[in-house]
Length: 134
Image 1 (cartoon, rainbow, N blue to C red):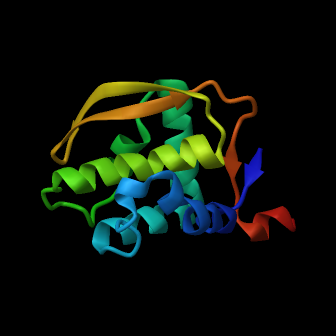
Image 2: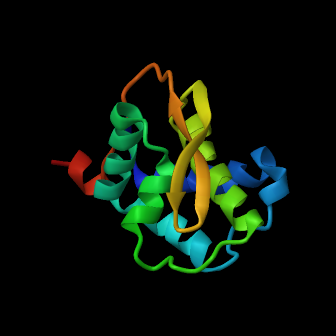
């Protein structure tokens, strides 16, 4: 499955708050939200996140945190869960992964555990709209 960053963001904007109601005030809430959205626009990072999840079974939250130098603060419990909900939404609702492995130890930037996703019917690749026209 080829997917564009813009289509991921459209789905987040239209469906995230209805799927993850407890995190309905996460969108637009500050630096963490902005960095989550910025990561979607980074096609190389997104494909690394997908590869690490699929091949290495490294949760997307861990790769996102390790790749992001702008996030060095301590996260609240809400922020940790909201981050997990954000990546869960992308992998389950946008990429259509059917199963997940919860409570994988990551111990990264104060986040102790996260989830990786598996059982997807079609491999996912994120490309820029410009790449599609080549």
